[in-house]
Figure 1 (cartoon, helix red, strand yellow):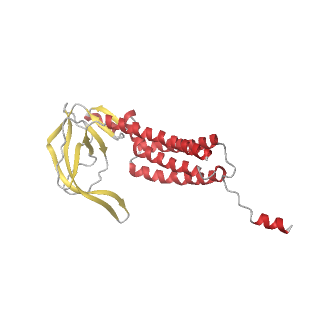
Figure 2 (tube, helix red, strand yellow):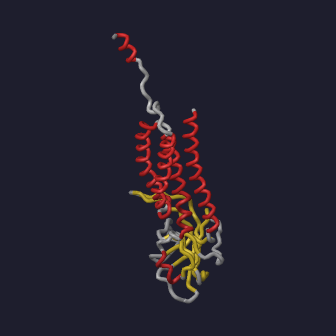
Figure 3 (cartoon, helix red, strand yellow):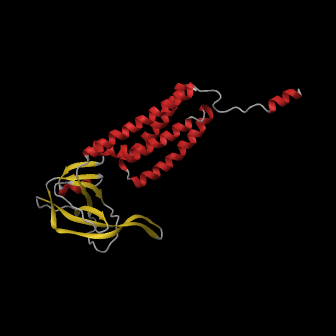
Length: 261
């Protein structure tokens, strides 16, 4: 009896992965982690700006890690690799894939809009106009430190930026509901161009600068003037989707190698 007690006392503790789960089940659990986490974050990547999407990523990051720890007790610590790959997939969706899908599908972009009708499309992130002209008589430049974020008791500022602007008007002579301005910017005291060949860009409703040099009317809308981004977002969408596929294939390789070893 004493010998049995000694033997049981020093018996090796059971590890979570001593009873190897089915490789197929392990594969599907990891793929579900990656796919579901990406799908959950996709709407935020499409509609929300990056500054808000980071907080969404952090909020969903904690439950994902908790689930990974719980699943690792049954399926082994390899499932934590799937959690890590899921985090990479979520970051890819927020930074690249969501924005590309929003632009290419028209969820966040609107094209060929008349200036006098543009006020009805301010919910879009990208807005491109037609039948417009840039008013050189209502143009100028100003300098301002870039406002990074506000916080109680003060604000956080970035580098000093030089902004150039021109008023956007309709060729028909109709007035716009809000003043629209084409905008470009450069660091320090550099120059930038607002070419009439372009027709729109990124919509800014809340100015992220503070200066007394500019005297814009209340409710003014600014468009960061740039060329159409069709080819850029098509490339971004393809590569970000391929990256998502590579992450899933990587998980499959992990499961295959672990079962062989």
